[in-house]
Length: 492
Image 1 (tube, rainbow, N blue to C red):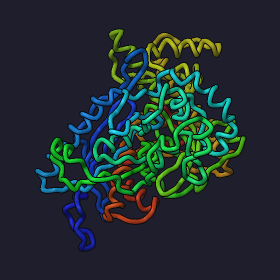
Image 2: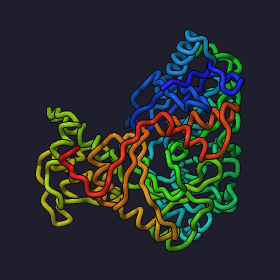
Image 3: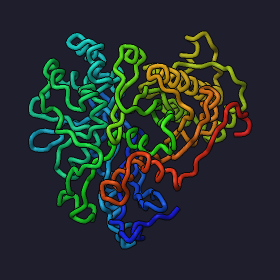
């Protein structure tokens, strides 16, 4: 669809285009978004690049130098494209995965390569944290689900935090671009150190754990300005000197949920990618003991909403299997694999897709077969059978999670929206409709970038309104696919 910002809407010229830096745990992209109140949003991918962990000094890390170089390359390409078209990039928004951070000293130097949440260093720190702050007390304040790699446990595993601040990955990128230190609120809510009700740092927990009160920079909300680009960044990218970095929902799921094309409030969502984030949107957190026991999280969303959700295993399982099979010389395409999996009978082996045994990379097919065997099942040593096991297991996990969400919140849902890369997986979408007993609406694929751009556009005054208005714009140019209950897999 079109929607070029050089057009005039209601007599008011739009200020330019918006750059979205959207980075996941396996890949990243820099995109240009054009937003018009009358025609919606269009996205253009300018630069894609791989992302992944590297082994360094016996641990798993993110290669941040390479990652930031790719961001700069993408922004330079975006500046070139915009200039060639006579457009102006009004601002830049950054979103990434959650919980991980880099340590920056008082001079602004990144003192160590950021660890990946897939590293095992924080396992022993969990018990130390819980000895000081019981899990029940942690949850009653932060509302964060227990994951062994939550930021609070990672910080407890650090050898020294003297003279440094922790900048979550999107905040670290923003700092490298602007020199300004901030912690964006949606990502702050994934640390295990933010008060879920007050929306402020839980300073009593910082004190109890012996963490500096200024371990994180001050909070900033989506839509607020982080700062203008540093001169060295202007020189390297060719962007105008007054280009600003604007805070968006910097936790990628927060941006994705902001762009869920829901027309009613009783929707459930699944942000499906490397991980699956399954839940509902609430006006306030649920901090009950039953919610903690069910391991639901209360993370902040755009406009002060609560993303009440649970992390469920995701397409990491499938991508890791494909990587293993490719190394063995098996190169069947994903569509062919999905067709073969769809042809298999229902009721086959399933696994617990959330089992931590699947967190680290390496020989995923064998680990999945071993997990099925522990359940008393025999999973055939064929890629199609493993793929069907993965997708059946994910769909069942989605259904259980949504049932729990409805029970714990007292709210019913009428439709499930799947956004992100998993929305393209027709077999997964149909299995989810069948397992949940609810219709599934799939799309948009680039929901995270859409949410990122829309928050920037609202901050610039190009559009206005709340989440309902942003979601209407997100759906205006999106081709959505609907899956009914009980439709035959063979038709996929």
